[in-house]
Image 1 (cartoon, helix red, strand yellow):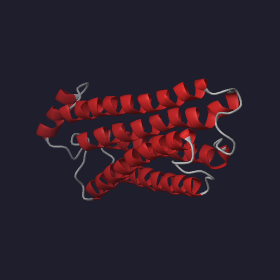
Image 2 (spheres, helix red, strand yellow; image 1 turned 120 degrees about the horizontal axis):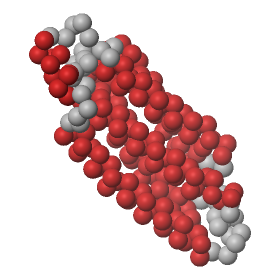
Image 3 (cartoon, rainbow, N blue to C red; image 1 turned 90 degrees about the vertical axis):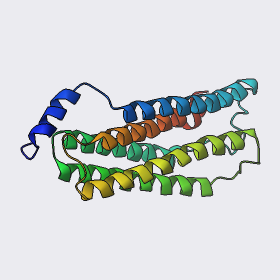
Image 4 (cartoon, one colour; image 1 turned 30 degrees about the horizontal axis):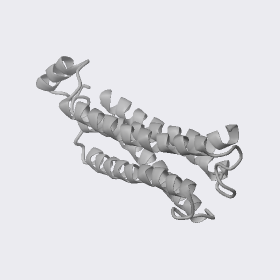
Length: 201
C-alpha cells in the first residue's frame, strides 16, 4: 500500500468495515434472484412428491454425475479464484487480482462448455415431459446468470489490467465477486436437487 496517497490512506481507514451502496444493491438483487431459484426448485420438489416411487425422474431422465460432479468442482474453484483476486487487491496486489479474475473467467467458461455438452447428450427436451421442462428451465436460468457473471468477470479483468484498482478503489471487484459467489452457491443447490436427490429417493 506504499503507492497510496495520503487521501487514499484516509479513505481506506474510513471505509474499513463499511459496505458501498453498490455492494448492497447487488446483495438485494441476489436476494430477489435467489427467491426465483427457490420457487423453481420448490416446483421440482412439489411435482416429485406427487409421483409414485420409482417414476421420478422418468425413465432415462435421471441426471448423471459423470460430467456434473467435475463441473461442480470446476465452478467452486472459480469462486475460490475470484475470492483470491478480491483478497489480493485489498492488500494492494494488482497482479494477483488479474490472475485470480483470469482463472475464474476461464474456469467459468469451461463450466459453460461442459454444461452445454451435457445438454446436447440428453435424451429428452424441455417438451418431452414435466421433468424435462423443469430440468432445462432450472439449469437454463442458472446458465443465464452464469453468462452475466462471465461478462462481469471479463469487464473486471480488463479494468484490472488497465490499473483501475488498488487497495482503496476496488468496490467493483467486491460487488462482482459477490455476484459470482452467488452463481456458484445457486449451482450447489441445483446440483443437489437435480443430480443428488434422485439417487437418495
